Image (cartoon, rainbow, N blue to C red; front, top):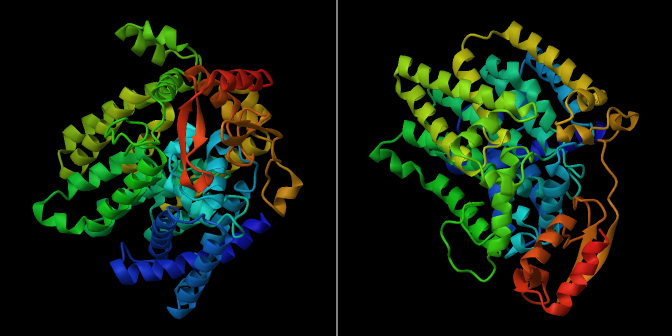
Length: 535
């Protein structure tokens, strides 16, 4: 916990410094300190994403970035922004901040933390963005720009990867500045997302901010569109906010404001092409016939797994393929899991949202519903997992109660919510016992005294070293790569490569030059079979 506070003292001035530079170049998206901090995040992420094509995001990149940020902080006298706050406002912020920082000091427990977030960040820190990286592990193809942002601060500013704590504090600052009490009402839910560099938190929170700004009459089209594009690059499943802003401000004369947002999207698409071979993960549209594109069998296995996850892995792919149309619907609503209740709630909210749009018949609600409906339609087609449409509940809540919830009620809700969430994090056995289908709950470890000083973290898993063709790689003894040296391949992926009859290989002696897949020779296939038998 104390080390998180130390990270705050380093990162806040850096973000403000880069935020000052951003505002000099592109203007302010709204007034206040939170705008400067969010602009700093936007600008730094964009810079590091471009640098990652050429350099690893190592300690030199971080040191130079910190130096520029701190110099800008003092040069533009950004510290004066803090002096503008009244004592009462600062006390509110500090009191509400303490439980957020404390919640961030618990053990990470989101499953993707171990198999996706940490390996992605470590790769970026060691090598940067690498051509054909998806051939090592397909999950790297969906690498969020949020992990690029976290990687840039991971060498010494935030070694425990708690950037989401810092983000949530800036989000809290925005809420207090704008008196967005309906948003404070639901903020405690986000405490489940701050022990990891999870991309859902910044994407959902920023989308609520953009929505709140549009509702309150913000007409800075250039930056609203640019930040909506930024949200899309953090989490493409939050595409609704980009669609909403585009539709709401759609006029021919507004096209001239789209340049910055188009640049953000262009860099993101180029990043996907380099890492994955296609413009958008997991959609296989825009085949450029690149040398480093993943093998079709691997892509097929990924799409089948996504379909199985739609049904919480309770049916095999062969069973799902036999479903009738009625089976697809019925089985989705009757899963042996708490997720079926989320599915019912989703349909109820969508129906209620559509009814509200018909009753109000104003441009804002109509554009918002169309954007949400289109995004939901895409999710239901590709992979109707509850985590892909959970943001809709927050949006609908904000639309209904944005002006109705007052400060006292929001504060009461905040502290009650914080109590129950901290209780759940401290005594995870209750969740594990009562919600056995909540898989992430099995990684919860409860409270430890050490987290008062430093955030709780797991030790690295054991691993073994192997070589197939020209690739020396590492397999963790656990089913998730986590802290294994690179290039690491999870046992599950090794097995899938064996089934497809292929294996990743380096393009040249230098890993930075990237990876392709090659067919396994008879000798290598036997060798790989022996490796698999050990796991």
